[in-house]
Length: 245
Image (cartoon, rainbow, N blue to C red; front, side, top):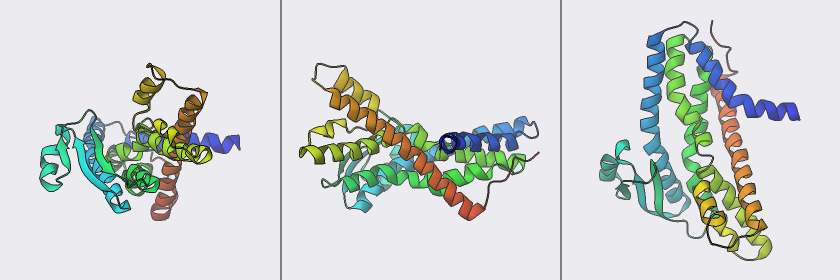
């Protein structure tokens, strides 16, 4: 059991290094430059798509969206012309600040999770296909796939903590027949910790446990998302190839 868990924990990083080995099987500054440029382009395109994914997830689930803040550097002014709920400027790269889930935690979870379908269907297959590819092809696949495949890991303190906190607080609220544990919900666990544990607001052991359990569940959901991507990549690509020599 411990061996399987260790394999799962290491798998995303093994996929990355396998792709990197194929990319650098022949030392080439050109291939390295292509990988870096591909990464930058992928990141710049993915970030606004990710934020729009939150809005689309909410709407598809039956909720409504009134404001999606996106940083100007990610084309917010252009997107505002297409999507009226987009506003220019954000404390983060982007943030869904105005939305209504109609009180449904299922819509809330869909809102959080929807952007990561790109991780499952595009990011992980791209990353894994880099292994065994020719160096230039591996550089392109690795560069484009990395930001999308590792998006859940980047979002460990944001979207995935929030998903974990929705589930944990829902269970706690059900047991206690109250809604007092909704204070554990946040899209920024570090900001939440400051508001709960490093302020004058009273808190108890249950709040500490609630936040910790939400964080742990978020990590589990991150790996579950990546594994879904692995299963999908095996369906469309077959077994992962060994790094090219």
